[in-house]
Amino acid sequence: MKLFETMNQHGHERVAFHVDPATGLKAIIALHSSVLGNALGGTRRWAYTDESEAIRDVLRLSEGMTYKSAATDLPMGGAKSVIMIEKGKVPTEAEARAMGRFVDTFAGKYIAAEDVGVNTQYCDWMAQETSHIMGGETVSHGGDPSPFTSQGTFNAMKACLAHAGRKVEFSGLKVAVQGLGATGYRLAKLCRDHGATVIGTDVNPAAIERAVKELGVVALNPGQDIFAQECDILAPCALGAALNHTTIKHLKCAIICGTANNQLHDAAVDGPALKQRGILYGPDFIVNAGGVIRLAGLYLGMTEAALDKKIEQIEQTTTAVLKEGKNDPSEHVAAVNYAKRRIEAGRKAKLAQPAMA
Ligand code: NAD
Image (tube, rainbow, N blue to C red; front, side):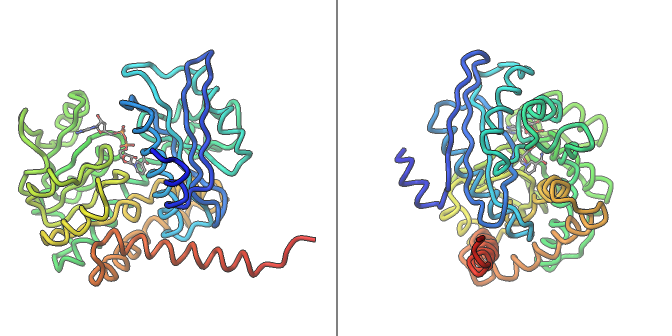
């Protein structure tokens, strides 16, 4: 990969690599943009096949965070970090603290939080080395953001239903959830509690068992493909790139609205492909903004009431973006433009400020 060229193309400000020989930590932090403010973004801990895959992931994820924060009108930039692990490597306090020291080198321009493979305990461990952590178990670190992500995505589902000209009601609907982890499980619960039938899948048998037992989720049989199931709403809630040239041709859903980041494998191709198939796509960084609203809002000192209101507003933001998307090649393009307008306004406002003496 031509790293500088890619950074330049996508507007990344800074990418930092770090190795801690004592713990085996190998990590990357990508700061995409600090135009609107300091950047909050989760830390993903994953067994990547190689370094290129990890770099691609952190670049894509950090860019998405910039758009996510901007679209929701948070005065925050966008960044993300990834930790490369060997498959099955158990997270340790020592590794997390080494990561915390790495985060601290950004002196507050980057604030780390949870993502796939990193939980509240891990955030608390990182926070022993730096004050620039959100998402830990203690109140001052904000706690687990995933219930707020799920709630925001559920609110966005309502906007998608209305935009598709359907009744905004879940009873009688069939929702298919890929990934029944922290966000997928809660989204499945919200849909079930509002009367929908939920079918689901996960690569982790324990996650399926729990969702079947506790929520009455209908599990797919081995060999059945969640992307080929007839349903009203498909909710990708696992890893990115779930929507690609292989899955899109099999889809039998009216709407896609899920919590996963970077759902489109290649946004330039897969966004328009969904539109051509007549499938309404709730852009990922618009619909899954509940978690960042929660953590960034607490970091910025917002009240609980203001935070709840902002998560409620995901429904209106989704509606506005989907309306714009009618004339765009894809809903994803509309969402990026929606966010970029806010970043540009922020850049101009900064330039208009008098220089410090
Ligand atoms: P999680 O790790 O708790 O859950 C993900 C689940 O997906 C796991 O149970 C895993 O076994 C399953 N999974 C992985 N690959 C799969 C596959 N191919 N098929 C089926 N299941 C698969 O993570 P999470 O916090 O629920 O995050 C899920 C997605 O949502 C991620 O893309 C994350 O970046 C995004 N997201 C999460 C938050 C949050 O608040 N946690 C906020 C915004 C976006």
